[in-house]
Length: 95
Image 1 (tube, rainbow, N blue to C red):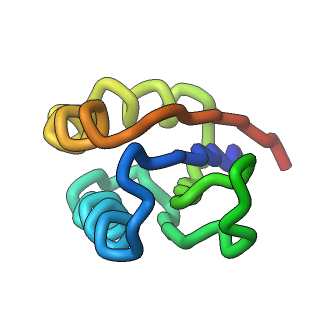
Image 2 (cartoon, rainbow, N blue to C red):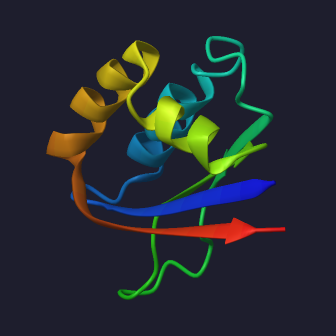
């Protein structure tokens, strides 16, 4: 299994924007068959170095992760995220 975790720091760090971004990520649930699990939460540290939204996706294989990243259902999410995010950081875990 592969856990794909992406952390986002928003340009406008309001709770409303964090909720909107989490909702956008969760809209992928059910649209991509090989997405085993998806969750999106908030990094509650709320310090300057913390991130505002943390996305976690689980896949069976690396190939499924790569397919997810190029899936047409992912494109509107990328378009929504790009102008709203100051920076992001991704990490993948195999378990």
